[in-house]
Amino acid sequence: MKETATTRGAILLTAVAVGAAASVLTTLGQYVRYEIQRRGYPSWDTCRCDFKENDTIFQVWYSRHERRGETIVAHEWGSYITQPAPWLRRLLHHSSQVMATLNPRNRYLEHVTLSPQEAYQFARLLSSTSADDDEEEPILTNARIVWRHEILHFPGYPFGVCTRRLYPAHIPEERAQDAQPLPALWDPYRDLPLPSEGTLLDTPVGTRVDYIGLTPSQISYCTARL
Image (cartoon, rainbow, N blue to C red; front, side):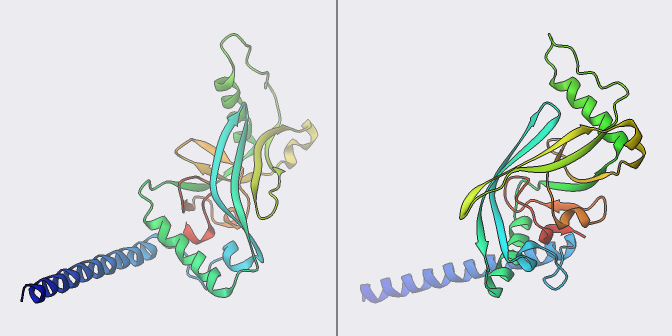
């Protein structure tokens, strides 16, 4: 009799635990679906993410950004995914949106444009804040400056580090009128633009892009609030 009662108690506790877990998962699923719709994340059919369109995907797992004088440098550690299956592409897309909605830090980037005038002002600001007390501020008077980004190091297979930089470049006076604004992703937390590229720079100015993970490079078109 005691064994029977113990077995029934264990079954009852298991049923309660399973029911509670199912209830939590259902509530969490409803919250995630609501947040995805509220934030305006693109659906799979309309998304322009690398998961959907690229044959080879460089998946960033961690990144570190630093300012070296007037230059912003990004180090992105990641791995390659080559010729992913259709089901894996969809999984990566939807997983990105789920992880963004559950990110407790609520960090994001914003699509901006750096005009030639802003390039000069921002470069001067970085110069003044990075100069040592016993050093003179770099001379930028009457400078003609534009912002440019480039890849310094391309990662190898299957795992590697991609190094990018965003930097102000002087241009001749006669080319100043032809200087074009540079689209960039701005990190409000660090108050810096980031040397990022890709389809996110084709979104409307002011578009917010939520983090997937913990660092700025862990973003995707999937989490753009369009």
